Length: 326
Image 1 (cartoon, rainbow, N blue to C red):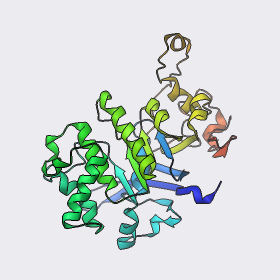
Image 2: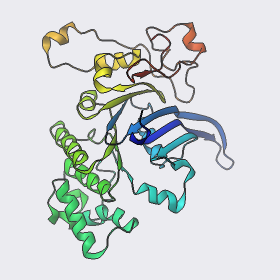
Image 3: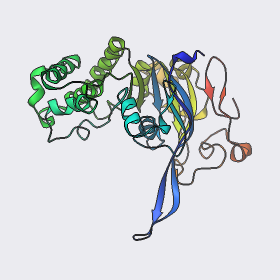
Image 4: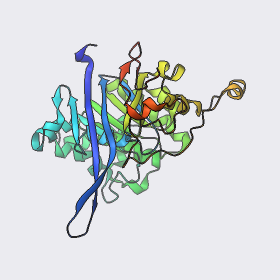
């Protein structure tokens, strides 16, 4: 693996949120194990998909990479620089190269600000443009995301959900980033608009040489846009592979169950498919199971799974999996 290809590297990334009791004197009585020892690389120019059930830690991974959350343990290396060791001005300078597109286009835009102020904020913060040059840059960004540049003095409530998400994309592009975290950018949009936004993201990637971490629930869309896919369960990555290898030959029992739920647009194939129905509920991240976290719902679980955490290993052709029985 050529190290020059790696833009982002996670090494044992861990994020716990403390649970406290008391009003005047607060004491910690536990912790939510949101992300627990996650390690993977994101290569320059690729789109890495991150999938899993709600609450598995996908968004926390994204926010911890960009240092909106400071990790409890582990490292985040961006272009060889450990972001966890930076703060203040040094971190702000690195943040210019990393941006985030948020899930809810209604909540992520300040309703009191004009589109010019929203998109121009990164330009002002990073001192990239001012005056007439800033106006021209904001109009250029609006054209880039297929919006009318005359809209700069309007406010968010005057736009539809799809248009608001395009404004969010324009804001993310304002600082000329190398890396963008797309946190379920199409989940809150109508199905008819989702494909337009995904196609726009692909065009921008080709045009600007961007690298994406694409967090999503929609496994069909992930296969369309991503180069590789990582599967998370209860704070841990259980499988990571090139998209076709993962979709055609999933190795981990959890990945197999996830993919069995994806509808196939062929009635004959759909009738012959076997759905894998997982028993029970997802355990609490406050008190996760010992050993393999998936063992309480896994059809292949044995006594070893409760005693020993499965090692993260290469099953061949850079297809990584954490399971004792692969």
